[in-house]
Image (cartoon, rainbow, N blue to C red; front, side, top):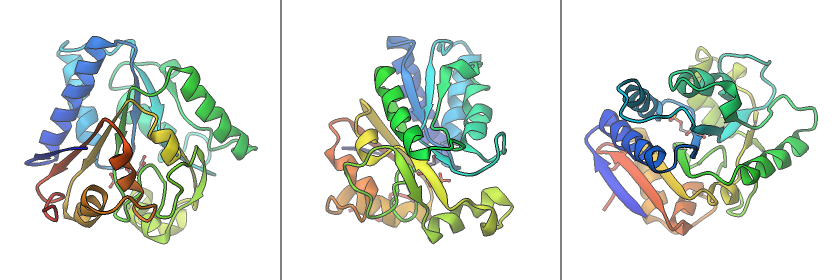
Length: 243
Ligand code: F6R
């Protein structure tokens, strides 16, 4: 695992956007796995700026989601499909056909999960998967005690994650869904390159456990220790607990 410490989130966003641009220069139809939440927004802004400045052509890029809420009405502004369309797909000038995600509105959620793993494999696998980290050490929505071999499946969010995410729902925890579909840890580990960005002091404990702690299902992000090409980009606050 490579750990890169940057001064702030803007620098982290720029560094990772340049890595994504470099991948697209080598492989124009790369499949880019994106995360949602606050942390990756500087990456998407920096990548969109590179596309606007014609530093990279992203017109053949393909985008896939890491996870999705279950039970939000279609088109809800905080569904991850809506968020990825708004924050990534549209700013990069891509159309919806270049974008795939798990179907959080499926009647048969279990079948939708299996179908999503199959779709990722049929697309040739994820070339670069962006990850954030939860304050409880989750990646995707693999909460603590998720199997390190897990596949895409339905999960129940912990109370802590619902509290953390209430800010996207006008601060009302009652509006935060209880369930999500998430790529499993085993699914995530199949991506060719994992890039985790963590910023802010609230992530320091989770980052320390993931990077320096034992490999443990109690800290799902520690699974990155198993991956042959994992990059962890942290700002100084998120790195503050590292030895
Ligand atoms: C979102 C996701 C989550 C977030 C994590 C951190 O798609 O998979 O693992 O990355 O909850 O969220 P932020 O960045 O909002 O702190």
